[in-house]
Length: 101
Image (tube, rainbow, N blue to C red):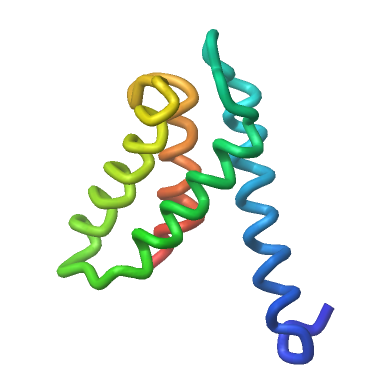
């Protein structure tokens, strides 16, 4: 696919890829008592991280802390602890693939 001719399609494919990978990470480390589907949790994390990254940040460290806090807030909303798995693997993926400087 040529991204110049179809820029919206290229962005959707990238977003779907992030959501798919996040879904897989959550699925592979599903904690007991998960009350939301892995896909829905991954979509919400992707949306929160994307919104957080769209804000103006003073520096990369502040941006990274903001993303970790936003991700932790999503986990807490579903009564999941923002420590251990799947949080650690989720944050590691976000740092490697969303926070590229």
